[in-house]
Image: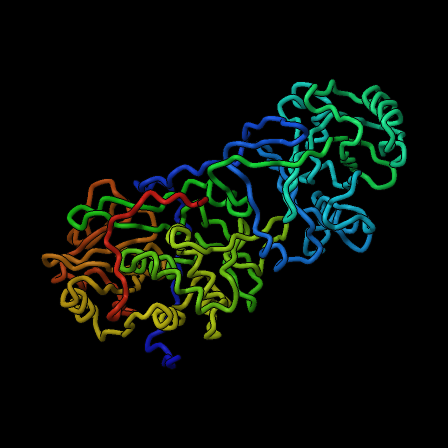
Length: 519
């Protein structure tokens, strides 16, 4: 790997949160949710049609060795790891990383239980308050609620099962031994009658167990449970056409403001905004900082670079970034990296070209907070911004030329002479119409007929400038503006890097498909 010299110019870019989400961008194609799949019961097996929910078992093993399965309910916000710790309830009030939680936790199985969940009777412990895995218990006594949510599902590497609930009790004095069904048929029938008599719900006929069926006992406490739920365990056979990764669904279903815009004479262009709800509130810090800064208030640099790359490169080229990271590119609904995840959920692992396009600003934030083989960290310790020190390294990873022109005029000429293959990463000073307070990174993507075209990561529909130099490309369309090359000095933009693909790099064709991000 060839060495990279230290950048000639390092700029600290500061930007205030601009709270607007009125971008006229193309909406992300709706993600098909893993919700309310239809199913039939055939000789004790649940036959499921519709979208199948899956989890990444390799990622689970990367995160923890104690997870034995995944517990979820399709149309409820219930999606939790099933843990087996050093005690029966070790993870009951903790996340999978072992951190104590105030009102949440994991679903647990006893320490002595088989980790493959193959036993005839399975016992689970989980909190029923706050955001615990069994929070639905507080509503289960209502018959209409039960009938709307009569089952749960458990996903494992050895096969998935459905838990069809047939009994729910509160303030039960039954011991775990009494809750466990006998093995003989006569004893089972007597036990079932006793359980249904104590239950607060009338079970669905299809949910009633028979002698020999496997049973799940779900308890909200280990010693004196106040709430008890009983369910018959049935194997699942899938007859489905699509899959949705439960670890990715939470992010994939968010409708963002970034996307394809009609950039007038440029045609289609893709624009990312810092304030996009997909990532605006994600914590954006490295391991050497301990602040609580977010993407919306300090990621104009990575977002500007993302605006260059997405309009320059074919999505297949973006995937090459992960070849130059220390580990998988992981983020979550908390943070742009794993460093500040609350570990109440599994992270999102970016893998496909489609995912790189949708989440490119997060990818670059992840890279510049230290997840790279170069050891560079560009997230500032103080202030709100990010330096551009990571840019040459990222360009090397993507086989891109990266130089610093001496002037803005020189940089604009380089774009024009490249036939708009190249682009400029620039920084607006406080005197620029592109900046509100302090400095702000932008991307100049094209020079056409004497006009320079600028992609801005802040949502704006007009710019105040001396003599009206800066104008929106298309009225009412945020993201792209233009100014005359001959009036470049009035833009008050400082050039940081000129970036251009080297030979052999596959270029973007500016025709963007309707990505289905959950695929």
